[in-house]
Length: 469
Image: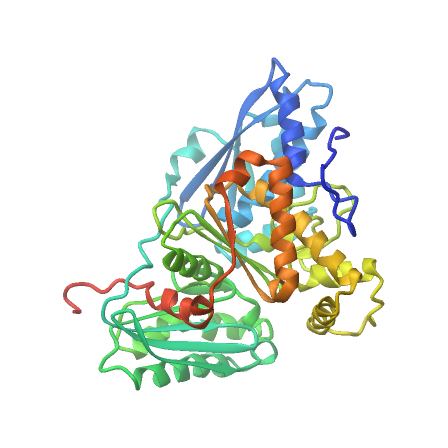
């Protein structure tokens, strides 16, 4: 696609091809094609629930029809990590089904996604197929919102499990009566008891400040389905056998220890977005955390969180053929290489910092932040580049989410660099997407949200029935 000319060029990443501009350029081709057709992409979860996304595509015989495979493949990648699913059904583009099967096969370019969406998350074989009456009838349209969150009545415990600390709070009718933050190092622990006992310890500490425990809610990095751990970096050092035996159902098991009280655990990105929604008293919130990786969470226009994955780290935002590759998934142009400490480390090399290859990424980020405090132009160029790429990516996110608010947080956004990121993102939106810019608020958490927001939102996840009150 040669007619993509960003009005703002990221200073340290001038070859960046924004997904938002690429898809709009493709859309212009479609608009001028008399043979253009509708294409439906349906994602089916392990329980049969499904969501459908609709797009337009060039006619199969169009001279530039090869672009359609790129368009649909990148869209499937986005949808898989936004919404989740172990089956992808294609309607309206039969000629793409076989190429997509190969790409998303066990030996294909997206073998990582095949494994994650199949056995790892949904416990079913992953497949791409043509939509027809037989497989469409076996799925049901899933609800977009979960019936969790926003409940502050009673005596509640909320906890949050991070990579360097675990936090807990005790609430009585929404008032925080106790909170604590405890360092830990879950990434390197091979014994499941370390993790299970760590969470139990939090609950005991909080319960000591309550007359009773009516409900428990938690947030943690990773993918959780029906309170079961499916994929989470916190448990990366635990063997698959012990993971299945001890970790997968650790939260249902903890619930039993606490007498079966309402107990909900969801991804920390969802809880972050929920916390932002509760504090700002508005909905349609996309939370984006730029930290060790890139985390996401979404609150709908009605104020609920979704059963989607919202794992923005794996969502493609750069459509150039030789985009930087994520070392885990092997895919190029995905958010983790732009909006995380990995992204900062990548740009630091381009800026000329010359960090040793053995220097840990958190230390590289700290060094860039210190340089920013000293008005080092190299550091500023890093944050300007992150902000430019982020502004273009927000427009792409808005094609898949209904948005009014973007909540921006994480270690990468600390200090003056965070302000530069937001200012540059706003400049991109103003220049390229003025209509979107006029209705989109970009904000960071306030001090009260930082102190208690995550715990309050996590504690609010479970509903308490009238019989329990």
